[in-house]
Image (tube, rainbow, N blue to C red; front, side, top):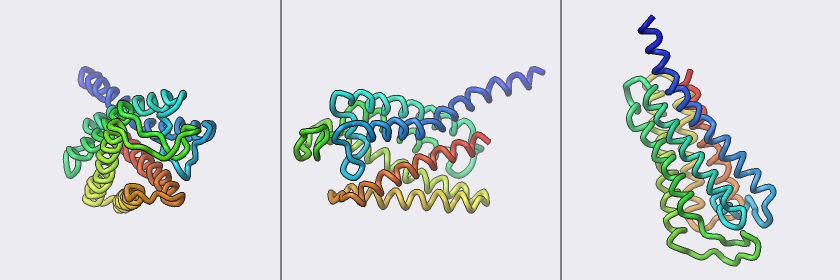
Length: 214
């Protein structure tokens, strides 16, 4: 009886942490896409989600970064507590945690306005806060990309070939779109591809966390 009670006591916090990580992606995109649909001047073909931090309603996106960052860090801790020892059990959760921390930095340092958003804004300018925001985003996205390959290696070793292919494909697609938007030639196709692959990557995070929960 004592052993059963102890195991239940240990398992519940881990499940709660995993649940936090699982909802972080859907919450982020529900909040971002809702704003994208209703805020004047915002265009998915021109602007990344981080630019929603500007303007009178910018606090909504700042809060979105903060909340989802905390949830993502909690999810990473849950994964680290739940994964069986083996390949990727250390660095996989750590990389997810770095991604979560990058979201907190994205909240602290806003992306520069520009390209007509908020309405009336001219060409994008570069500020110190904007540079720090881009640096935080780059570290976070690259950590997430590396995480897909770390988990792919783990899944392959376990014999879960489908999950390994899914993970590698997600990492490759996300890296390609990230490289495209980082090139400075972010046309409408590149920007929409970036939105799509960020959703793909965060969806992968949710899927991995749910798999870990089971």
